[in-house]
Length: 510
Image 1: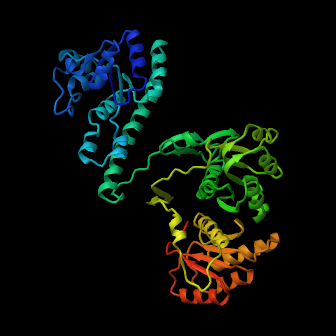
Image 2: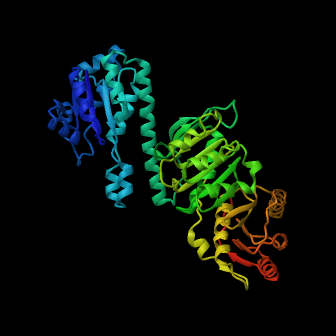
Image 3: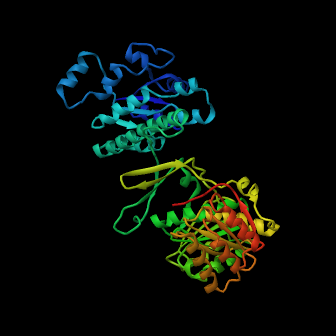
């Protein structure tokens, strides 16, 4: 039996090759891999000994040869294939172990296009595809995590068709992802990221219990192993809906650096947020905004879930907790609660992936865009249009309100007082209705709005929302500006002695 080994990522390859050698396999190798194997005392044939041709053109051509691809591709169950192989002295290659040139690592470290081009693998993908196509006879190994399983299958004679088929699927995923990465990079470099084709490639992190509804299957796919590295299940099982809610909760709570922020989400919308003296204080304040909606919601903690906070959360039913870190004794507080789900990022503070692009499925396709972010400068450099300026506390509250509004479904308005969200209206067809709904909810909760601030993720088209805010006691407002009636809105704010700031940037979320 003959194996061809040619890898860029050499993790585990020595042990893998030694195991193959011990099992009686002949090894053919190339370039740096061949040199490494020989240095480790592993007997191997250099590729040119098989092809009878040297590597050419600075290594661009070394495996593109009938002696290699014929050895991989000929069918062992077709007599004519076997005869042709014998006629031309082609020895069968029964295992191909290949991973590809480090294109991703290259584009992360250099803008030198010549170097980038040289790190586009040609022979590697060709061998992977050949072996995958002929999986009935050949094992194709592209993942270092499969080395032990492959050796075990050979040793125990469980190298079944089903086993090889699983390797085949992984191999085609490997080459598809590689080519997609190259195409996306070229479009980003030369077509502003928006070429004729756009490839979205994720790696499955885990299956969800089901999709949005029980009759739908679902799974979480990740970019760059973000969830593998930053998401650990401590209790329960994440559902499809849990993950979308966790996404919204973490985005808000993580938007405030090292502040002990706590956000509460229900059905992807915030119903509580606060920054207190510590995470316990933040949670208590966040809960005041809408404790009814918080029931069965998702709580994101930009810090550590400790025992005191766990005991406070445990006073009501919360479906999901996601915290930067979780103390062991805090976890035990929920031992008797079967329905709660607890996850952690095992970090000091919550982290975000910082994806460059965003997309959304629409019937028949998807819309694709650059990711939206709120920069701190956007708020710090906001222009005051009124006679009165915000106080230090009001400006801090404006920052909170503006960031929460930017991460909430349009149309929305957010009211904040003393670093605590006190009212929110979201997902409304009218901004006036959003403002009214928020104030009505605050009144039902018995929340004193006097001295609060207001943020809107888009401009106010009329002064009526300013009039309503003034009646509620709002002292400062932040919004993008840009309405043809901005002058009326500024005039209204001055009439009420409010501070009004324009950022010049709109943050719709649909």
